[in-house]
Amino acid sequence: MPQPIRLKDHEKDARMVRKRALVGGIVFLLLTAVLIARMYYLQVVQFEYHSTLAENNRIHVQPVPPTRGLIFDRNGVIVADNRPSFSLTLTRERAGDWRQVLDVIVEVLGLSEEDRALFERRVRQGRRPFEPVPVLFELSEEQIARIAINQFRLPGVEVAAQLVRHYPLGDHFAHSVGYVGRINEKELSDLDPVAYSGTHHIGKTGIERFYEAQLHGEVGYEEVETNARGRVLRVLKRTDPLPGRDIVLTLDSRLQEAAEAALGGRRGAVVALQPQTGEVLAMVSQPSFDPNPFVTGIGFKAYADLRDSIDRPLFNRVLRGLYPPGSTIKPMVAVAGLDAGVITPQTRVFDPGFYQLPNHSHKYRNWNRNGDGWVDLELAISRSNDTYFYDLAHKMGVDRMHDYMTRFGLGQRVSLDMFEETAGLMPSRDWKRARYRQPWYPGETLILGIGQGYMQTTPLQLAQATALMATRGKWIRPHLAKTIEGLPAVDSDPVPDIQLRDPKFWDYGRFGMEQVVHGPRGTARKIGDGSPYRIAGKSGTAQVVAIKQGEKYDREKIQERHRDHALFVAFAPADNPQIVVSVMVENGESGSGVAAPVVKQVMDAWLLDENGQLKAEFAPPVKAEVVQREQ
Image 1 (cartoon, helix red, strand yellow):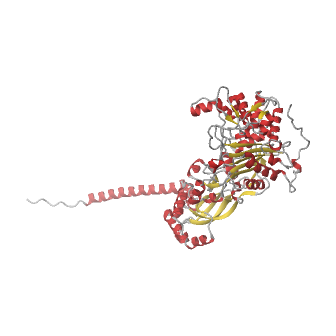
Image 2 (cartoon, rainbow, N blue to C red):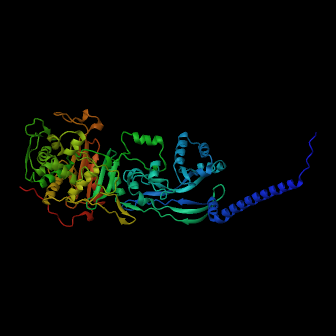
Image 3 (cartoon, rainbow, N blue to C red):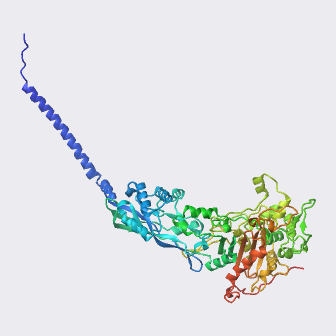
C-alpha cells in the first residue's frame, strides 16, 4: 500500500529561517564590533605610534660629519688641511639591486673589475640605514657629466661634495703627521657608531692616529623630508657638528727640509730635539712617500710598489728602526761608571789595540788596532777608545749597565705622543735567560760597553739619551704636539730625572763629547773647524754583519747593504744647549765622516742667521765655566 504524502511544515521552516537569521545577525554584529574595536585601537589608542611610523617614512635623520681639525707646524705652515672634493655615493636602501647599480657605474665610467671589487667592499661595510656610502672619490668633470646623463639608470647614486684630507707638503711629514684612510671593518667594530656616523675616514698613522679623538670632532644631525623615492626635499631641523680641534706641531718645516737635504737622498733618519722642552724640531725618515693617495684609497699596484721596495719607504726608521747604538752611548756609560764609583776622571787604561779578559785568550779589538797607549776618560771619549770602555763595562757588570742605561731611556719607549715607537732592547741576564735559556757571559758585557751585541735602539732613543746629557739628567719626553686648540700638551706621567752622586759627573761626560769635535785628537774634529759655536758630539758605527776574530773590515768585499751603519749624536751650543741632533745613515760606514756632517748642517740651519753667525737668542747669557780635566 503506498505511503501517505507528508505535507510541508511551513511553520517549522519559518522558525528555522528566523533562527539562522538571528545567528547570522549576531555573528555579523560581533564581527562588526571587532572591526570597530580594531579600528578604534589602531586609530585612537595607537594614533601616536602609527603617525610616527608614517612620519618616519617621510622624515629621516641624517648625520652631518664634523670637519677634521687642521695641523700646522710651529711657524703656522699648514701640513694637513681639508679640501673640497666631489665623491660618488650609493645608498643601498634606495638603490634596489645595488650590485647591478655598481655594474652600471663601472660601465658608465669605464672602470676596471678591480675598481668594481673595491666598490663592493665599501658598500658592504656595515653602516646606518639610508646612510650614503662613498664608492669613488675625486670625480673629474667628465665623470660627473657621465653620471648626470645616466642618472635614470642609477637609483640611489648621487654626486656629493665633501671635504677630503690633503697634505700640501707631501712626503715631508709622512712619517710624523701620518695620514688618514677609510675606516675598515675591524676599526668600524671598535668605534662608537654614533660618534662616527657619516664619517668615512680615520687616522691611520702618526699624529693623525694618536690625536684622532681631538682631530675628529663631534657629529651633527639633520632632519630631512624625503619623497617616496628617498630623495631629500627639504631640511626640517639641523644640529651643527662641532669641528675637530686644530693642532700646532713642534716641527719646523724649514728645518725638516734642511735635514732632508743634509741626508742627500741616502737611506737614514734624522731627529732634532729642543732639549729644554722635549719639542721635536725635525723628524726625517728617508726614503719617504706621498700620503695623499692613502686618503681616498691607493691602488693595489701603487701600494705593492711601496710595500715591496727594497728601500722600504713606508718604514719609519726614526721610531721603528732598531740599530746597535755603537759608540754613541760611550758618554752615558762614562757618566754611569763615574756615578757607580768604578772609575774616576783620572782612571787610566793602557790600550795595546785590544782588550782581554783575565785568563782568556780572546782579543776584543779596539777600532784603532795600533792602540792609543795610556788612555784616560777624556781621551777615551774623544778618541772613542774601545779598550777603555771594555774595561769599564767589565768593572761595572751587566746588572749595573742595564740599570743605568735604562735610566737613559734605552730599551723603553721615550716619546709622549708617538704610538708607533718601538721599545728597542736593553739586554739583561733575565732577558737572555728568558729569550735563549742561556746564562750571561762576561764577553757580552764587554761589547755592551761599546754599544754592540744584543742592544738595539732607535734614533729617537739616542736623541733622548743625548738630550739627557745636554740637560744634566732632566727628563722631558720628546713630543710632536706643541698645542692643541691653543692649550699646551701635558705629560701626565713624567719620568723622574737622573740623579747622580755628584752633578760634576755630567760635566766630565759633556767635556769629553766636546773634545770629540774640538779636541786635537777628536774623531769628528773636521766639523768643528771654523764653527761659530761649540758642539758636543759622539760618533758611532753599528755593525750589520759580524766580522770573524782576526779579520779586518774590508768594504770592497762586503755588499753595500751589509756595510756598517753610521751614527752621530750631538748637542749645541755646548755651553748653552739649544738643539740635540741624532743621525743614522744606513750603510754609511763612518759616523764621523758621513753622519757628523749631516748633524752639522742641521745645527747650522737652526742656530745660524743669514750671515752665518750664531743667532742672538741662542747665545749664552753668561760665559759658562769649562770643566777642565783634573791633573
